Image (cartoon, rainbow over all chains, first blue to last red; front, side):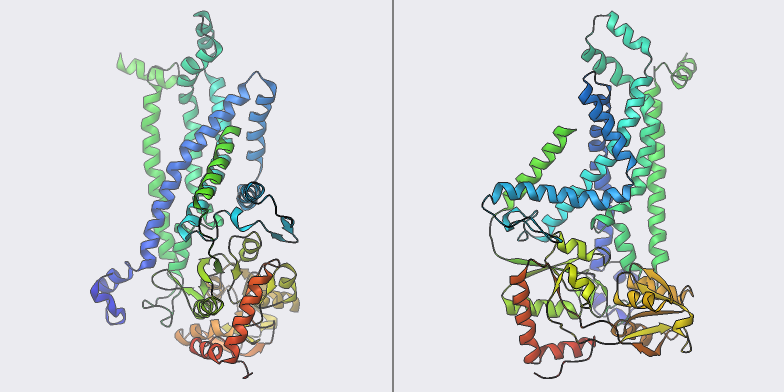
Length: 294
Length: 244
């Protein structure tokens, strides 16, 4: 990156470090922190949406919908994450490709499954093998978001379902007494009040989600764990300008600090959020705040 | 939820459709990127090594546009057959077990003995704990001998296990171990070697017969004009082929 980095073997100390820490590989490592944060930022709303839909469906008076909502959270919660990530992503990818195969190549006569191979016509490939590498990466990222959202949505559905049931029944009865329809009572009374009951569970889920992001690596996304392992490994002078021993402890130590910082900040934010949500609620915390204010 | 999945599916279809344009052949080359001198990531994070140079040359000769992708060794075969990339070029020895699942081109390096790396020269592999990378011919060999085997997902971890004393020796390709032994005075190569496995070839899907023919032809050409031997010597990955 810097001009004096042309021959790192002549450098030492800080100058060496400044060159070492700005190699293309390290820049990719720094960028992968962004990848993880972006992933978290996208997963949370999507998973909440899945969870909300699942919880609302589970409460439905229409039996098939209720079954769907309950079945979703029961099945997904029961499957080990790692199995889900290894199996589901490949299955999802193949479903997409199969649908496209049927649409784009109706004249194709050969079977899609040939022994071990999954063969679709070139136009059905997703992404097309002609598309540049970044498209493949974005697609992989999209699959990761979808998988994470489905898994964590199932847990969120259970949390929200419980939270909806925790809203005092008297509140709903009052709403009915005012002549609200079921729909109105749900959106105006139940939903605004349920968050305070949902937050501890959702906060917990968020913490688990943060810790689960290294699973990204299983999906072929070059995340922080991948780069830490790659950069920390022993490097021989033959294959790099910056030979060094086994530095994995250092790199994984940096990851440890990153994750601790992330969970520490989250905890602060969640506590503040909890205080805001408790305000004016018919809960012990809300009551305490009312008394303190009075 | 159903609606969401449908939307997501529609989105995936639409993106694909928008990208469906040119139909120039791009061959995606899958490698591990953690096995110098065969394949590794250079300081810029690009795939480098013997197989990078070989692969680029083969693609040039076969008139193909190639793109490099890295994938974990563990899942390198499943991801090939499900179509995430089109070839495996990752120092993979041709074995009958692998040949049942995927196809191989002709070998681009001859069969070479595997070597042991240990902390001292008088380690007896039969009595000790041997480290090897999961899913390699070396791991299969150690298991077959009935010796104590510890497996690791990456080559790097097998060496770390020997350094930390968790394993007495590591069994791997000599070309991978030699540069490590050269630069680390604590580690030595044992005199004993094992002749296991066939030569190294490129892995392809069994249904991809055209691509296999193209690479076979290009490898054959490089064998005869001496350029393959020159590459092998440059990177010191194996013994050379006899002139044809």
